[in-house]
Image 1 (cartoon, rainbow, N blue to C red):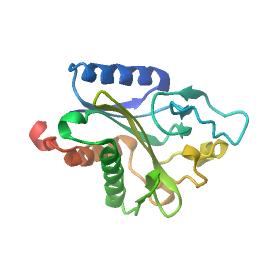
Image 2: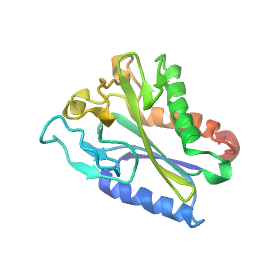
Image 3: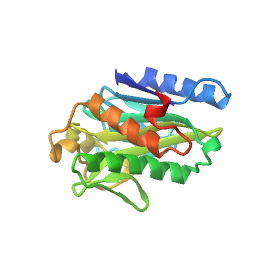
Image 4: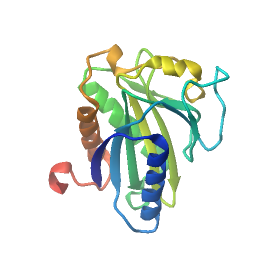
Length: 208
C-alpha cells in the first residue's frame, strides 16, 4: 500500500484520478494507495443526491460524487485521507472498514490530546464540541475509494450553509483544542496509524 502526500488537489480532477485508480484495482491491476491531500473550497454530495442546504445558494461549487453520504464541505485546513484499498482479500466488510477508519482518526486525535468518539447511527468522529471528522465511502468490486475528512484549521463558517451530512450538529476542528501541526505532518502520522490497523498490511518499517 503506497502512501503519498499530494498537497492541494482541485476536487474534480482528483475525483477522476481516484475513480481510475479504483477501477485498476477492480481489474486486478495497479497498487493500493493512501492518498492524503486538501482541496480548494467545494461542497460534495453523495450518490443519493440529498439536498441538505440551509441556504439557497452555496458559497462554493457543489459536486455530485459516487460516494455514500449526504452533502458536506471540503476546503483549506481540512485533511483528506483517501484509502484506495482491496477489502475482499482482507475479509473486511463495509461496516468493519468504516469502524477501522473512524478508530484510526480517534487514535490520531488522542495522540494530540483530543478526546473523540464515534456515535451509533452517525458515521464519523465527534469531539465534545461537535463533528470533527466526516466519512464517505464507495465500495465496489471488493475495492474501497473516497475516505475521511478531518477538520484541522478549517474555517467552520463554511458549514453554516448546510446541515453537515444531514445532521443537526455543530462542526468542530482541531484548532479549537490545540495548535495543530501542519497537514502534511498529520497526514503521515494518520497514514501510519491506519496502515497498522489494516488486516494483512505489513508495518511501514517492514514495507518501506
